[in-house]
Amino acid sequence: MKKNIAIIGGSSDIAISTVNHIPNEEYNFFALIREQNKSSDLRNRGVDVAIGDATSEEDVKKFVDLVKESGEIHGVLHSVGSFAVRPPHAMNKEAFESVISTNLTSAFLTLSIAGKAMLSQGHGRMVFMSSVAGSLGLVNHEAISAAKGGIESMVRSAAATYANRGLRINAVAPGLTDTKLASPIMSNETASQAASQKIPIKRVNEKEEIAEVLKWLLTESPDNFTGQILHTDGGMSNVLV
Image 1 (cartoon, rainbow, N blue to C red):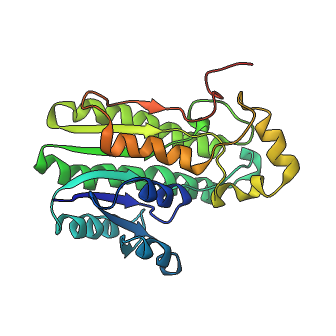
Image 2 (cartoon, rainbow, N blue to C red):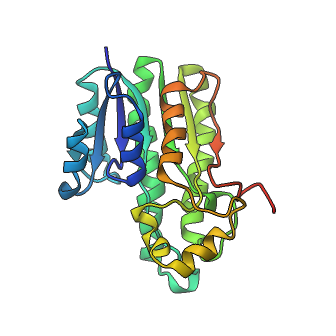
Image 3 (cartoon, rainbow, N blue to C red):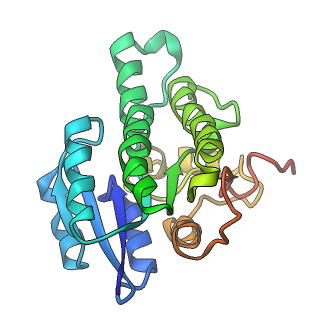
């Protein structure tokens, strides 16, 4: 019998790449996305798509209930993100709160609602997307650093809370990755090259590299692996060259 994987923010490049890396003869995929016009690519891959807002408690509950209709939820991937690289003096309160809501609030709702469904099963894997900015001070990243740092702290705490109830909760923290979300930098050759020079391996991530790590966490990692932040950033957060 196939296992079910639910993806919150399923239209992201990394989420789609992850679906492509996990064998669909073994897993059913469900995706919550915000825009209907982004659903065709997922549906062509056999993904059951629901339209909704990841920051809406009602929408996330409806989505989780939809997945549960097909059986237990084996894995959950939170792949919601935003691109906001501005210094604090150039960002107002509303813009900051939007970054927090999009990234951190949606992650908490995923943890709370999908986690509750998994508790009744006694098992489940949850993976959240962080960023190198969650643990490394980067220029003009204050808002996204606050959001992603919050996700990392939340993951560690949740892993402790649910360690004895069968839930395994981890996060992946990529550096700059060649995706649509990073197009403001990747489409500018000067900016892209400058960013690459800050990375020890001197290149940005490919989305397939991140997807391989997500696949491992969702389907293959050992049961004792929980509360971890995997830094898929070319060594940026830990290596000096």
